[in-house]
Amino acid sequence: MATIQVDIVSAEQEIFSGEAEMVFAPAVLGEVGIAPGHTPLVTALAPGEVRVQQKNGEEAGFYVSGGMLEVQPEVVTVLSDTAMRAEDLDEAAVLKAKEEAEQQLHDRDAQIEYATALAQNAEAVAQLQAIRRMRQRNGRG
Amino acid sequence: MAAGKEIRTKIASVKNTQKITKAMEMVAASKMRKAQERMRMARPYADKIRNVIAHLGAANPEYKHPYLVARAEVKRVGLVIISTDRGLCGGLNSNLYREVLGRMKDWDDAGVGIDLSIIGNKAVAYFRRLGANIVAQTTHIGDAPGLDTLIGAIKVMLDAYLAEDIDEVHLVSNQFVNSMTQRSTVEQLIPVQSLGDEDLKHYWDYIYEPDAREVLDQLLRRYVESLIYQAVVENIACEQAARMVAMKSASDNAGTLIEELQLIYNKARQAAITQEISEIVGGAAAV
Image (cartoon, rainbow over all chains, first blue to last red; front, top):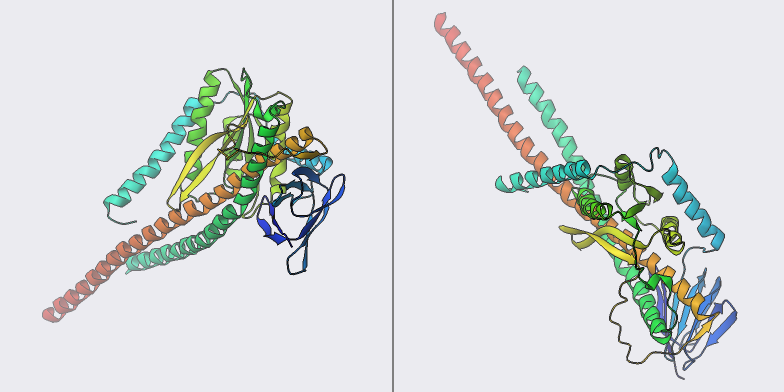
């Protein structure tokens, strides 16, 4: 029987890669079954289980909390989300990041003293370089 | 032998410091390997997503997503700055600040406003002291951050871009060249500049569910997120590498210091003994 290459990846790691006879995935408009030679398709995934029917008859299941499914006639790619993604959850993360930034922030519109900052930085970097050179001269490090 | 005791105490204290720096060096080395591994593991996702976006773009030339269109006039830019949470990592952060301050000055001179979204403690403290406009921050990301910890800081920038509050988003981070070298970079994130030279001689005309816009929108958002995630993981590898090198030289320096102190101690002891002998001999001769 024909097989189809399946790759399941998340932003953090590769989860599965191998041949399959059939793949089932929880698309947003209902579960889809992908057999080899399926017409090209791109769809968003709902939270659920991606099932991969392997050649030896075994079935492997992977939970995805959402993501994208891309189908080409011989390759299926699941771009899985690892984190729970929902608009309100994302919104909460945004608020948290903003709040953290707003805490203790006194003068938001203050002008940056670029000259001073650059000078301070140049000094710090120069010190480091001097130390490195000194160490090289002493023939160690 | 008052001086001798002082030197001995000093040697003991330097030895203790050396133990700490040695331990930190070894911890950093092992963490660096793990971070590099994570860097490697994150790569397939970005490659695959870039591939799909390239196909989509080729198949739908009529729909231009805002992330792909450069704006004629840039009035305000957003910077996503990635730094470390902790210090003792050599000049890693200083070099990054120098790089980004140079760019910020150019923008400032051109009358372009700057918003910052910062990941990592160190840059937060630094840019707050400078009085920069920090709109979002994420700190205490740990050694193995998940994408979910970064979403807040990223989405602030993406939302601001879509709302046309800012016209470009740049990513500031360190690139891992090898364990001795890290390079500070400022890269344009949005508008997405190039999606690589994918081989697109034939592309698929996909079926889209729910529709092409929705799909492209989600894909691009995840693409940008994955780029930032990768940069964060890479920056952690840089941090550990820089710390490893810094701690190695600190240990070496402590070693030299101990040698020098030991020499001084031996000399002082020898001098004391010689003096004692001469005193005894002098005393015996007088009797």
